[in-house]
Length: 351
Image (cartoon, rainbow, N blue to C red):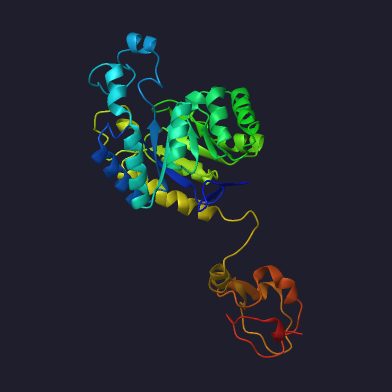
């Protein structure tokens, strides 16, 4: 199944995956840093950069601000209260517009995860090509319906969701007349243990839903992203930073430019290498058969009129004569002319 993310981009499984560099809030509220990350992602060969669209009001309730002044599971200590961090790291409407225009100027796709209907509307006004739904909102029918109603493609992460919740989310989107859905297998741990990743879920989700399946990768490094490409993932989303040591929520678990360049380059090579399900040979490989395969040759001198026996034959390069699995074409036949040991024997040499 093919999904058109835009007029220019069509994604399909077992083809080079669409690579999304998830900047998220790694810009730390600094527009110069955000643009530097966009430039770095472009240089790495990614197809899109993704931000997150929320405000202090749309993401977190008052009770959470009062109860949890900092996220204790974060790998780094941060400044101030949770409210202060959310306020610092969110993007204003004008900043969204500035980054959207900058992405267009450097020819990379801008996309973002909206966390409320108001932010969906803002992204629609910008003219985004598709909408990304975070794993936390897979059971949020209010947001899913609003996003689906735009009739834009929906890229839906499935972290923390069981199969029934994924089915309900897909039905919610479909019931709005939107069948442009891409599901991302995702494990909402930062980072997950290898035994918790379960990449075979990519194959399971593909079989169960029939939609293209990608992978939202929260692992360290690039190996698991490349493994997802080998399973035919149509989208690979990976957190991205220019410096893992910057302060902020996600820098430590993000890919740096070296890692992202490997993901962008090698995932495409892997997809191309997967090739066809039919047994085929490259034309160059067919030529190699002539050099590397063996042909029947004589083990002793024969005179015209001698009958060829099994013991008179062995097999050596090149593969331009009678193949060794076709001895029935030679054994028991009479040679037409005198022949020397180590000479290729061909069908025209015997009667």
